[in-house]
Amino acid sequence: MSQPPPPQPPRSPEATSPATSPATPPGRPDAEGPPACSIRDLTVAYRDAPVLRRVDLDVPTGVVMGVVGPNGAGKSTLIKAALGLVAPLAGRVEFFGRPLARVRQRVGYVPQSTSVDWDFPTTALDVVTMGTYGRLGWFRRAGRAERQRAHEALEQTGMAAFANRQIGELSGGQRQRVFLARALAQAPDLYIMDEPFQGVDARSQQAIVDVLHGLRADDATVIIVHHDLVTVRKYCDHVTLLAGRVVASGPVDEAFTLDAIREAYDVGEGADGFLAALS
Image (cartoon, rainbow, N blue to C red; front, side, top):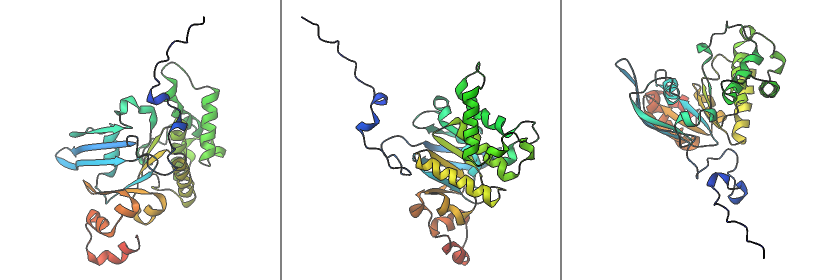
C-alpha cells in the first residue's frame, strides 16, 4: 500500500500567485500594500536654521508624485534626508514598509544635474551601465547582459545614438536623460528625481515625461521635485505642497487647490488671476 505524500509547508504570502488577488490597475495606488515611501515626524536643520519641521508624508505605489513649493521650502532636502544623504534631527523613513538599507535596490535616485562632475572622462554608456552595479555585488564586473540592459535604457530615453559620446559633450537635457537611463538600468520600483526638468530643453523634457508616464503605467512609483506649477497637472497625478512643512498632499484634484497653493507660496488675493490659471 503506497504511502501518502508528505504534507507540504504553507506557502508564504510572497509565494502566493498574483492570480489569487485582483491586480491594481496601472497608475492607481495599491491600497493593500505599504506605501512606496512613508515619512514620519521628519525634522531637518542646517546649523541652527530649521528647514523641515515634523513632516509626515505617504507616497502611494503606482503614482507620479510631484513635490512643489517655493524656493527654500525644503524640497530637495526632503528627498535627500529620506535617502540618508542629509542627516535629520528626528524622524523615520521607510520604503515599501522597510528601512532603506533593506530595499536599496528597489529605490533609484536621479540627482540634480548641478551636483554632478560633468568633466569626468566617461561615456554615456558607461554612466548608464553603472546603474547595474548594485545587483552585481562587489566581486562581479558588468558583462554582456548588463551592457545590453544599459543599451535598452538609452534607447528608452532616446539617447541610444549618443552611447559612446563623452558625458561632458552632451547638452543639459541629454545629460538628464542619460542619468534617467542609469536609473532605468537599475530597474527599481521607486524613482526619486530631483528637479529633472531644470535646464532641460523642450524635446528632452517631453522625452522624460513620456518615460515617467510609462513607468507609472508599469506600476512603478515616481517622486519628482518640481518647480513649474503650470505643468503639475500634466505631469503628476499626486502632489505634495511643501513650505518647510506639508501644506497639502494627495491626488492632484484634491491637494492642488487655490487655498493650498496660496498658503504654500504665501501669496495674497492679488495673485488669484495667476492661481486660477493653474486649476
